[in-house]
Image (cartoon, rainbow, N blue to C red; front, side, top):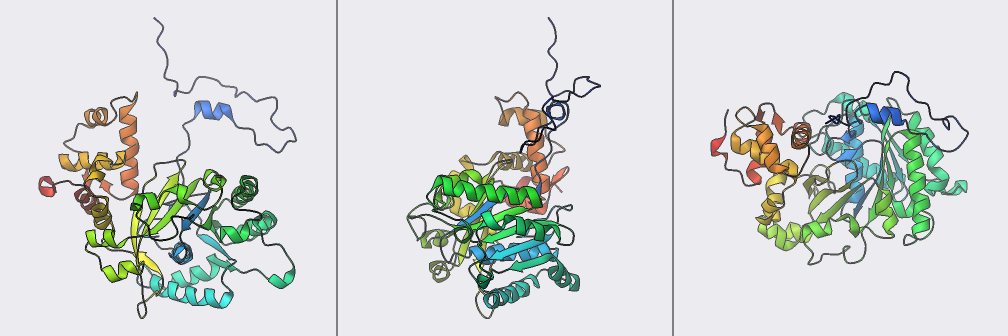
Length: 409
């Protein structure tokens, strides 16, 4: 019997095939199938590891006054300053330039928010004088000149934004559109109108190379406190308007305030919860990788630094684990299952990884490949440092139900 070769192995072909249609004057980019057939696919590129992908269009959605704009601004400021974003690393080769197109707040209000946001950044131990200089060169806020008579919908403005992005020192990594409704022309519930907006975002992404994040609202039934569970309120289908918005976005970030019941379950201050001060921030959709990262944010109040902003809660993982409840253990992400297996074994050193992989992926033709993929994800999140889990990894495993008594040092 003839042995079937592994389809992933490059076949000997010294002369790459050139498709006869390549180079024709059409508005299409011809894919290189020879490269796709003979080379490993490129890894997913992240702007902020495990949270914001690089070079794709996305949406950040929440109800009114939940803190969408302030959170987007905080992300942009940290990125441009050269700091971590929400406790997560920025890819070393990612451009740090940021454009913030503000169509809702004027320059004076933006100035006030900017000042409070920079004060909050000053709490980061890594903040220094250079971070402030980085902001001046890398962070570009834009405001519409209504007297100019121009149309400020993205269909008309994407080329101007792309040109601005190309002139940012070191390149542009993120363009924030505040808000989608102010930059999309037509009716939000119209699929054809929203497709035109999504096409403009995609053109801006392709031209600039940056991630484009449009700030948006959630629909009726999700814009006020409700009886829905937190993970239902964070679902990408809560976006307001046509489903073409969610379909066109390559990733969706959602935000939802904890209910009084959820706050009580986690022993959080009830009065603060009723004000909407505890907000879950969730990667609800990610086309090219595993979705599911969630962080708990807490609102700052006067006279605290960064009043009005949402900052990462120091006990985020534990609180979210409590809110998920015992049922969450039965619905773990594969990455979390791998983390628990490593924790139960005390590390990778004494673990039969192939056997563990087969147990977790019994129906896969390549369980070890799946396992290795999850190990890479754990390393990127700084949960694993071969052959042991990091302190952060052990803390995460403990929130998922692992008994730390078997921990090896």
